[in-house]
Image (cartoon, rainbow, N blue to C red; front, side):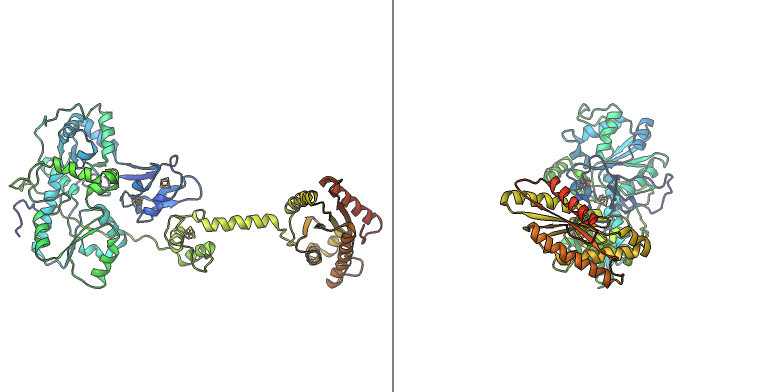
Length: 583
Ligand code: SF4
Ligand code: SF4
Ligand code: SF4
């Protein structure tokens, strides 16, 4: 295997305008229905879920621009946009150099590649290239590096998504990344070296690098369509032949994406030291193999997708083979001679700095979230995935960093709802039912009594001179008395009865299937029991007493209103007759 002549001299060319060129991913709050499908697919947990609107937000520094969320969203709520303003300005000025990546052929179909290139010139770009030069430069550099040094393991570095993921999550793999720029960057440097660094280079395509200082702007094909509209250019009205002598479109030594053809063929047929990994899932195993097991894997051809055409921004999955066939049919024949001008001095080298590691979640806070989530009925974590995370622990870690909220957790929300329901049903001080439960149950008992013709009774209890007791002994003592009385009431009634705190020092009991005589027996037992409560709590005899009023529901005559009025009147009679009585 020989290094071809086209190898360029390595000399980094300083470029102005740092920090530019990236695609932005954002969620449209209007279109988003919070189904969390995007959260489930995001490999970097970059989608934060807030408690209030906007519910979902993409955390820019964590986003590796993989496009998974774009493909996963069933509601077209994920928006992807490049720096169309910069591109438009460059086109309007007429000084922009456009790298039009080859996948444009599929996006703009049925327009031909010639028509798309013509449209780019018509829109005002000074030079339009087809992204082949970058592939050629990068392929030559791979060959040179592989020849020059004995690499035990070399990882392909021309996929920005892979590079960004390695930098952020597997820094131990950085020494194994081939120090080669991605083709768009290599081509941008080459074009600036050839035409002058003051010409802004714009990349239109699927997967630009994030924040490259070498590109003036990066735009999507949809942005380019928008730019054509803004510049009043119709692609389909362009001639079907190049109306300007085209920039180089033929390949000599590279395959799509910048792999050298010679390397692909040689490795496949001889040494076997060539591994193909597709998808980011393979990175964990790769990291272990090289940094823990110290294996030498040869050249690792790693891409987040098979090719740019598989990228979610390229279009629907089901059209993948159509896109591939279309692109293959538009590829011109290979050149027998190098297509890159070897006199142009441009760097294709790359340095990969380690990204600051994401802040680790505080284990204590993670624990608090796990406690709040609780365990499933089998005593193990629920791990139901309803929040968008595969496990409760993963959710808790992200929540501890403030990028997820317990509102996402269905079991937690259900438990909270149950708790709220029971809080509304139980009086906090006494543990008896609340007035709300009493009303519901009274309605139910009246209906049941009307249907079955069975009577039931209602008992009103009111502590005698309770205000005085409170004033004399204090409110805490008053609360102890109320708790003691409630316990006595609970003890005196059956499970089928309802005992409720009516308010203050008043209690109401519904005695099911009980007539007035039976209710009087219960009332008397309660009256005596409550005297006993006073004694047990250490009050003098006669201080803690209760008056009881009874009424019976007659299905033929009484209404709910009449029943309560009757019980209230009976209570009044008991009070008027000297208190500590059942009436
Ligand atoms: S583009 Fe990828 S990394 Fe960024 S938010 Fe979407 S799924 Fe996550
Ligand atoms: S997939 Fe994400 S962005 Fe789309 S609707 Fe669901 S939550 Fe919203
Ligand atoms: S229980 Fe909650 S946190 Fe755990 S996986 Fe299910 S929804 Fe997520």
